[in-house]
Length: 287
Image (tube, rainbow, N blue to C red):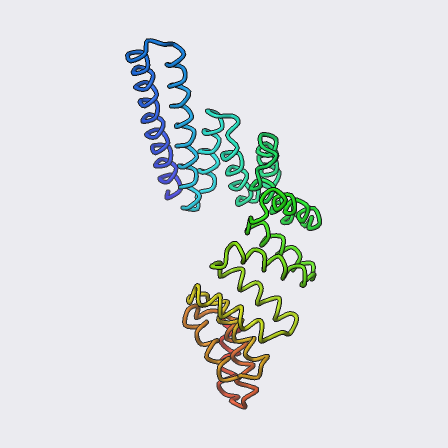
């Protein structure tokens, strides 16, 4: 019932948008005739109006993405492309929506179309990298991220995504270099600081990890996973009471975080506080 209602609302919104823009087209064309009497000028005005309609569909699609309606977004981007077949932003956005829907073949086709229109469109190379990485083709993904970076050397998302792949391949030094470069362009990105901290945890460099988690938490104090992993870094440094404080912060934000309950239990066990530890382990196993 709820799905059908949503679908009806969606159709009405699309109809209203299309009707409004067609009115704009008619008015623009009519004014062009009245004021210029020129068929060429009229044609240019109409073309501009249709370009504006394509952009309106793109923006509508972006709105649906923000609301989590990726199928609706795909319809909007398709409408934009019908009106403006070489609309590279619409092709790329449609690819992103298909990627979010895990329709990877369709996503690749959209990204390839965008690249065919503009080979220097870095966003599509980055998107293509995301798709092939999701398909387990990690080395191929690195090549696509490198292409995006070659086009736009300060493209922080491509640097970050490349770092993610390298981290998954246990190539930690290279991954850290990518995260460092991403942070040069985007120092306020808490997620990059967090992932950089995670690599330092893997390398048992707990002091450096702590610096990264603190930076992430300065940016986003409600980042529960960063509080949890900060606790792990403090545990590695033997600062157990502070670690418990970090786990408590994580649990204040996310009370059902099984990992935080388990980690807190481990530290309490180290401190000989066995009954409290048992309660934490019980909470970590509860449904």
